[in-house]
Every structure is written in structure tokens, then in C-alpha cells.
Image 1: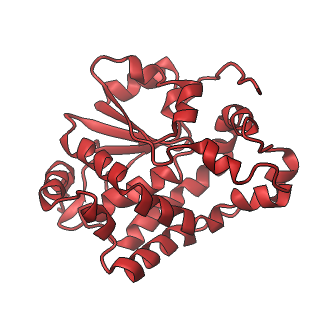
Image 2: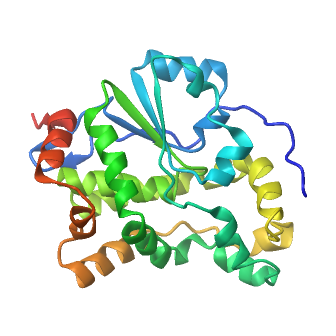
Image 3: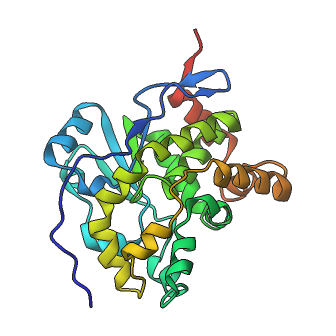
Length: 264
């Protein structure tokens, strides 16, 4: 079994507040919800800064496999911060097994962000109960909520889109927030690769230089647009899968009560 090197703690490179995004009736209030790359890897100074800034709940969207490598991190040790493990991808090993032994070009395609639209749709529909659970945590937390996966891009992006849809944001504004991650792609890869390379190697996927070099470096808005288009075509209302999984009008109202800052 491939060993995991000693963890290197560092500041997030894809952390941002959703405050200021336009929603129905106003904008999202700063200090309501933050999205991030792996918060289990943050330094003590960063953890203290987030807590001092009002973070009172962490939603960890990573798989059990990933959690087993890094644990909750330093934020999970703060008594005034609740920790919630809500994996949107329950078993990274199962997904990796499907690509084990794949040709480097196939591995590169699997990592190509421009082709993630179908993956987002499977995640949104298949993990709808977990998404609703996360929204309920956000709706009732006593302070700011920070949610994260590894890169803060895909699982985090799907939850951010779900939250913003529930708040009545325009799809174009959701896409605008999503593509901001592209500015940080190189830094994200550098930050998480010491964990992800050996973790994926356990399941037969070698993230060697040849495979990584073949990955598209262009960050595309299309996966999120494809998600919205597919949801509209299949369900009419993009929120329909979440409503079927327990997203009630009362929960939406509670989210809006916490999140909304009326427009000036």
C-alpha cells in the first residue's frame, strides 16, 4: 500500500465568501457562507482567523477515504465550531476502481474539468439528500458556515450552486462564481497533490507528469451550464430533485432569512 507523506499545513488558495452575489430580493450577506478548498490542511493561524471571523460550522464534503488521510484538521478541534461530514462522493475508491489501470490519456480525460457536466448531474441527483442535509446545516447554524471538499471546485461547486439556486440567484451569477475557481487552479493542484497523488495511487491511478500535462488547463464554465440545462430538461425546475429529497418551502425561507441582505 502506498504511504501518505507527512501532511503539509497551508493556507487555503480557493477560499471565498459568497457575500455580494445577487439573489431574489437582494444580495447574499457577507459572513453567511464560505466555500473553500481543503480546510483540513489549514494552519493554526488560519483556523483561528476563520473562527475569529465568525465561522461556527464546517461542512466537509470529502469522501470517507479522504477523511481517513487528513482527519478533520485543526478546525475540528475548536469547541465552538461544529463539524459535519456530509460526503457528496461516498466512496472515492469505487470511482477510482473504474479507472484503475487506465491509459494516461484516459486518466487525463477523467481529470479534464471541461467535461465534468455529467459528473455534476450525477452528483446533484444522486446526492440530493446529502445536499439538503448540508443546506439545513447552513440554514440553522449560529454563525458563518464554511463548506469544502479537496479542491473547492466540484463537490463544493455543486453545493454552492444548490445553495444559490435555493436563494433565488440567477444561473449566470452562479456560473460567474463557479469560474472564479479557474484563477486558482494551479495553486489548488500544488496544494493538494501531496495528498491526492498517493491517495489515488492506492486505487491504481498514477497521477504522473504525463497524465497531468495532458489535462486541459482552460477552466470552462460549460460544466455548470450543462448541469443547469440538464436539470431543466429533465425536471423543469432545477430544484426539483432537492425538493423531492426534502427541501421544503420552510427550509428555503430559513435560508433566505439568514442569507439575505436587501439591496440598497
